[in-house]
Image (cartoon, rainbow, N blue to C red; front, side, top):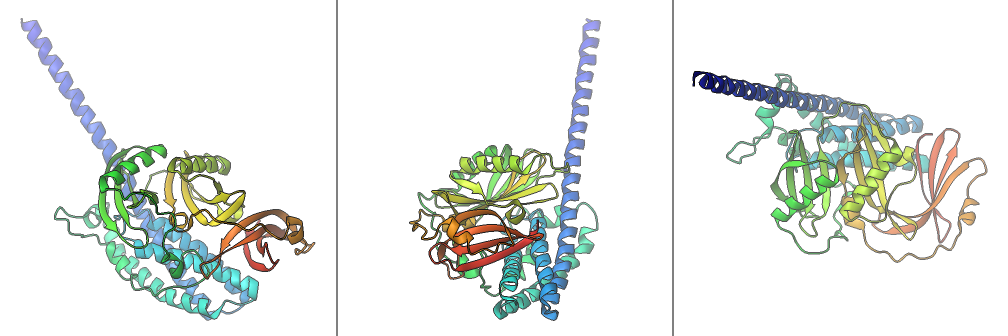
Length: 442
């Protein structure tokens, strides 16, 4: 009996030791995940602050300098740095909707800079109304930069910053210090220009919001299935708020199995995924090709019910890789015609192909079955309008938006002249040159 008791005692002790060891290991693992997330948030904050400092200076240059070549380079830098700022903004662990105005500001700044650069190359100068808009955005860039710099002492105090200042308390009151950044940008005046983030286009009635209205519970279940389609698993999904605007949505906060956070918007009508961003921690190098990433993205969009979506033409023009994130734009294809207003932007983790970001408001606002006139001009006809000094890479029939909220059927000619890529849009009915976009070195 003594031997049996000793055996039971030893066994119990071993089990207790194993359980304690397991608890220590799991605690260490959880702690490491927390430290990795804090490090990612810190890096995103400091990078965002750096890009905003850069943008403030670059916007000042557009006011001070008028030489076309210098202005062109400056506008290109604004466009790219605003995109990078917006990417880092999306990493910060704020609840959905906290950065709505800031994100819109950065998107408009990037899009306006791009439109201004295109107008400069096409007409020889930046239109006066575009310059006025850039001056207005410079003022708000100064405010946002100052707000970010004032946060620096708090961020640098240690790894507990994101716990102490970002989470909402149990009373449900919002004590999120980051929400203060957004408040100063809610009064940005309407920005009107030729681009998808122009305020007059954002106020249009969405054309693809159809079907039944869903409950918040259904929105959660829809999101859970969508995350499974991305190759991930959600530990918890909860509705944080309900947003209105031209696409009324349920705003969701998602906790993944590894503890990382994601946010999303699901439309109340039809249950469509409008917006999604996963703050996934990934430090590995890009392991997949652009072609593989495009295939992953197309499969994911098919799972969402977005059929006939193909990547936009020209990797150097519309698609990019920043760090280990691959960004690809997809547009709807109707009978072989690329419908550029029906656009979905995907962000894909280049290390494993996981979908970590979706922006589908362009598609939801614009998508509908269109009645397209047959082009009066053939491909051969429009190519005659192009100089023999350029190399024509491709010619595509497509629909593009105008700055008046209408659409036109054009031929897109992707051409190369010396070391630059040009996109030339020629009206398929009249042969009129509708637009020229000069992108980057080939």
